[in-house]
Image 1 (cartoon, rainbow, N blue to C red):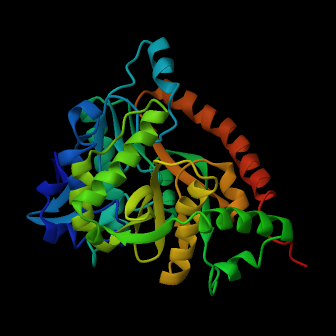
Image 2: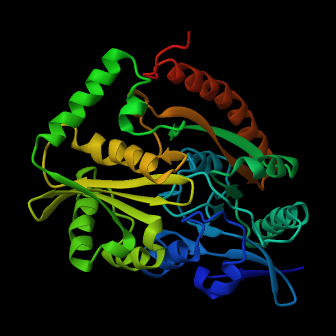
Length: 378
């Protein structure tokens, strides 16, 4: 097997990428990564330098590991905010580090991409070993394989990576006929509160629409991007993606990009940007030019749940954090990220930290599960 590091996702031909088993995940697609690298998060100034690790046998692509060399941690959701200072106190450099994750996307998904028809038990471990070799060769402090699927969790742990637990809140479709059928499982008080939130939006006179990427023209994208950008500005943050990213990614991803838009007359006044695959809706960004109680919950959660039920999707991942999602029927689930630390002493320190943190995360997951709005069985 030969290791090749590609400095852009588009260096890998579309026909090769199409043969990789990534389950139609929109973020592990050439369309998303290639567009982000060209007009958005991939810019060197944003600290995402592509080093996508490809394994070849001759000219045959066997497997691919999305990989980025990073000079900071903004936008990768690695939760390593204090680690750089710990490295510095030890007289070491934390950056650069290597990250296998999707820019600005804390969504569990495929990371070890294997060509369909090949033995995963052979190619996936080879990708892991190659990543460790590249980490050493580049002198990076660590390799972080973030938000991995359950299938690869055991492989990464067996290779000596430290497994770190996180908690997100996801919605699951249990065969609901419609939104009212979903609400029927709530306690009376929780159901009444949610209906009141939805009623305030329904009576506001706004028109709500779901538009796919190939149904959004440049003018509408400009309004959506303005709303997206203003949300970042409100919290003093820098928007990750420029307008050109959404225009191009929307055209390429087509039905795999979904935006819930609120119109006042013909004017778009608020929006929530999502992505999807065959089974799951992924909530990402929101913005609004008006103040209306309940509009955030409507566009970011309720419209998405309704969309999943109507389109037969099995789950909805609305993004990181947010205990307020519990009252809307989103359940706590564990997420997993894997860390290989180059320096033996720092590896022991991080391992000790993760063990102590894991107990707290388990308690947090159990505690939040007690605040779900569903009726108790029996």
